[in-house]
Length: 393
Image (cartoon, rainbow, N blue to C red):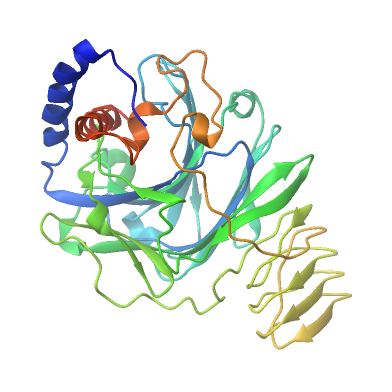
């Protein structure tokens, strides 16, 4: 989407936009970002990912209120960021809110294993009362208080691979390890409804659904790379984000096999209703109907084609199992996000303190029906705005 500007200003604005967009592709390294067309208010997001290794490199999933980077806007963001340094054994959870001087609540967690050596299931829960982060069914952090209640607007879902120039944070950049890749097997989004999470859609990345996802083509201050759409690849049922040198973009290698679970496998939280072609991870009184695997907790019933172990009071009909959250039931549907990003078409509520009215105008780019000069304007303004986005230190 783009801001409607009075016709007398269009040509000048378009020229400026093109000038700024040309400076946004000059960096010698290329990363990748994908973002959802639809923004959502609260929910549970699960994703199965294998992260990148290498000092100075970040592999991420985050939620982001479109337009947060605009002057006068109130910033809203929730992060999962895996550091490539130290053999990718640590990651950071964070909430970013505020206008002008932003408030952050960064915490760094030691995973105990390299997150680049295998796939893990990451989960982010956002409710009116708390935000929590989990890996492989184990809650790592739960945040409550003023920052959580400040998250009032729908946010888009985003993955990216980039390199920060804040060496004290991410380590010194070592380009000898390039190319590096982030592998995303699947993602599930559960809407939040009166204290329960209900599966709204899942994506197994058998292709890149253009109704749901778009590719970033911008950069921002403090980022060593430009986001290049050519570094977003779908192969063998996996979304691959790459970090490369300029002129070496794309992914042509073999996708590492996810040995632990099949496509569509997820982790259910308390009160979750899920239906899926994979297995669930949960606790007591979990019901799963799945072709994947897992470990069942107390009172768990599992029907699966994998193999595994049931816990106390478990009824298993399977060569597999499922780890699930309390009162979890399984099911799956794949939905398509509404076209556009940020504005009224995706249900984003305006940020009254934002100069763009919460429309997310500069993030998504021009609509498919826009004329060529409007599209150029939108891309240019997007690149300019995103250059100011997400400064970490």
